[in-house]
Image 1 (cartoon, helix red, strand yellow):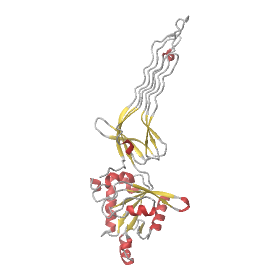
Image 2 (tube, one colour):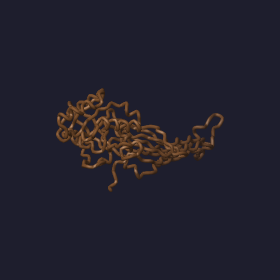
Image 3 (spheres, helix red, strand yellow):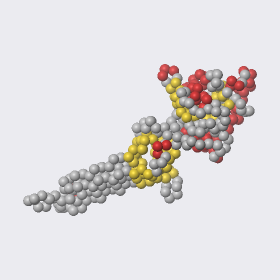
Image 4 (cartoon, one colour):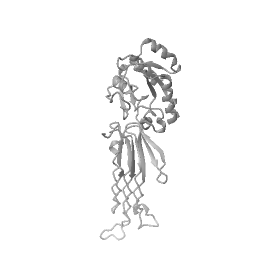
Length: 334
């Protein structure tokens, strides 16, 4: 099986550079005795900095980069010459990347930051400051100090980078509920579509064009099955990608024996994974309604949750799609 290019989780070790040592040099010149201290400061060590770059949408470029090491600053020298500071090392990641520090004692992880907006930066390991040269320590009572500061040590640690896709609407449904077909119909995305379960093995993003050049982003994640919160299926791994969505679109196929029960099963899986997901606005789409006639739709309608906006759609015939997009836009504006 070909390896997926979608990597949303990496573990890396970062080491920033030490600061350069200050110089304890004394000025020497012909005919000048005790010229005084002229030691320069050391240069700053390089930092390791995370930077949100919208040109990236996966962490695959960091998958095999286990160690990220910045260079040390250069020491100062005589003549008040400051040592050269080391270059910072930037790790470009997709917007929406979360940073967790790994406790090396017990392996636990603690979230310490995230980069969401393009260009936003987060310092993983700060470079050590350069030491002060002896010129900084001269005084009326100590005119020839013969000591200088050593450079400050850099920082080191293990970090987990975890991507949570930024999208307005997240699609939630069982395998073969028609999520990928809907995405390919209302956006320019071309996800894999086939007549068997789990054809979607990685999240897909698509942009829906709306009126007056307005648009919103939809994220399709692999299908969820009952027991996903216990590790069944593959949907659990990708549920983190709907944590940032403003609206959740639940999709249940008209082929289900009990559509309302299917919706409740999906809702329960989200509750088991993260109860905070239930606070998001929700819309229900009954898919593949080209298989239903007006009489069957009328029978199903009363069984659906009364307080939940819902619509019958068919991505094949286009039925209900305009109404669905209007409904999603309205929910996003709310």
